[in-house]
Length: 594
Image 1: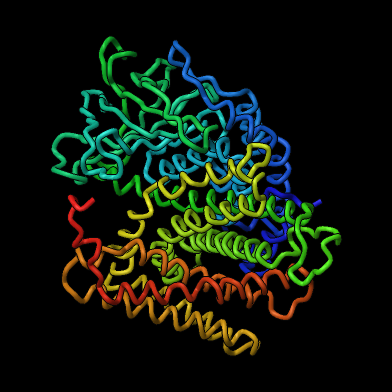
Image 2: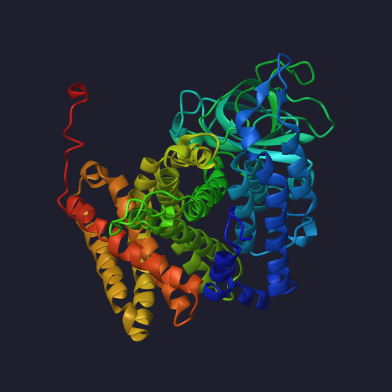
């Protein structure tokens, strides 16, 4: 029986028939791998996700972590057991260098592997997801001693990692953080301040927790220029408890299996050598912390996009299964009231909802894997030009890869509830939890609005618009291939070409007025329209990979593409019209009118 967690068949299609990831094995970094090793990792991931992650998903949602009177955290035992199986399989270390205990898998395979766990159990999968991002940052910017001290144990599953950015008075506005780090004579720093919304911030699931903390070191200047990055572990290397205190747990509507914490650094609850202040170790240079942290943040943004995709995908599969088994109603043309009810999937409107879900989740999965392959290209392409090209394209796609799945795979979850009817919003079925879990992803790692500002305000205008030009040229190359191939693709290719030209033209109009307030007023709408254009491109790419292949799977791909390109892409016309008009409705609205 096919899994309702994720589609192995779709992953095989995207990885092998479309992206041809096996070609990566010709590169020195991946030469020990093959199609067989790639498939073995994905098969193992499905097995562990199915047997160890999925079974406690509803339990960890119902019995969320609890802070005990002694300040420790109670998490159901199944979480620790699942994470041990995950770590023992070597999956935490999947994409890391062999010399530090990794498998040296391509990022695209590591992401596909992790997607199984995100779909099976969003809460439990968040612990290793954050740990991998933490470890990647330290490998990139830390010293060899820091890698040995903190990264190796994380890859072994003995330590877990976090990222500590937000504060109670400074959520996404990192320029306003107040956490301080004072240099000490021994080269360490004493960190003091409070951090908020720290996922995985405290628990008893591991021997240690490695916090990456943004703080201000004296002499750095105002705003983000003064921010440095420090490793602040829960326990120091000699086992001494560091001055990091759990203040409380945040109780969210979803993702309840992940502890989400308020942490006090350096409040004196656990003094080190008799003095308050959490001991921290500087990563890289002083005052460059935000630039370093963006390495983890951008990785986490793609990871959030995958989490949204995974939750939307499993909800879609659950609703397909339900629609094929539940009988209700009769076709419009049926005249005999005594006729037997038909399956839900026989109704056109139910098929519409299923097609919408399919077009969103399979389009989002394609986008996430494409971006992951760009990471591999950036790191291992044979030429400097190839590496640079991948980096530029990845930069411009990252806000879309985070926010588009968070918006539209949530809509897929909403439609999955609708397909289930009244049962959809009960706890007897899984889809209501998927919706609650997924709703967080429009806020995680930068809200929808922040991603819109990033895309329109930075990414498409950086280096004179190099990213947008490269994106348009890359889409244009796909359009040209489609136009030169199957005549049946001509309509779809033309639609994508028109939408892409409109995206470029509207961007020029928006930046022609010389007024950033007007330009950025509707950046969220710009993000949504650009996202639809990009996902339409992903569908055109998939159609080219399908070609003339026959069978239900390929027919399903064709129909989902047809749905997206006929039902969804045309929505961008009205959005582009609004943007081109330089509408100031939101800017001109006074606060006291509400």
